[in-house]
Image (tube, rainbow, N blue to C red; front, side):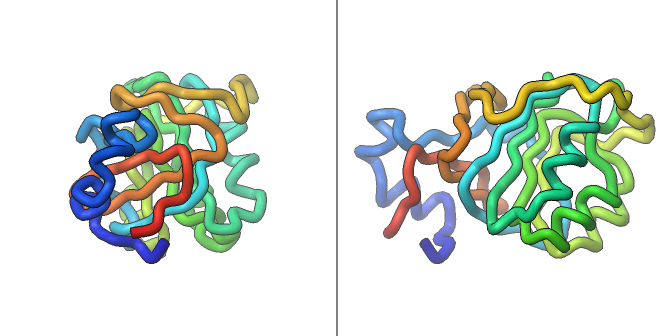
Length: 166
């Protein structure tokens, strides 16, 4: 789908909203990165104050995918920084949504990729390599599964069970 505004997607897909096939995340995320509009198939990751698996994912080819990271909503450290975001951009990721904090905001804002996060924080995450890949996560009031589609713009973030066309 060529990216339409999320508000237009909602207006055109009332039936999908009523069945839960199309969901809107609660508006809790800050917008970072140069790309304010992005979309793609979802890859999920669940971590807590640990960024090893985040970095590992972003070292892979993104192929237009969106990494959705459930960081447990922690506001005690950043689980994503400028270098991994630069790598994500170079590897073809469409965007990153982090239920947690980021750091190196100036670097991230210089990247041609979309990033959503709760806030910025100067402290680094731990490096234990703990977490779960490709598992359903619940962030911003919405359950998100690997392989679903995410659509983000300045109005908000939508998740759909299938790729949308309008």
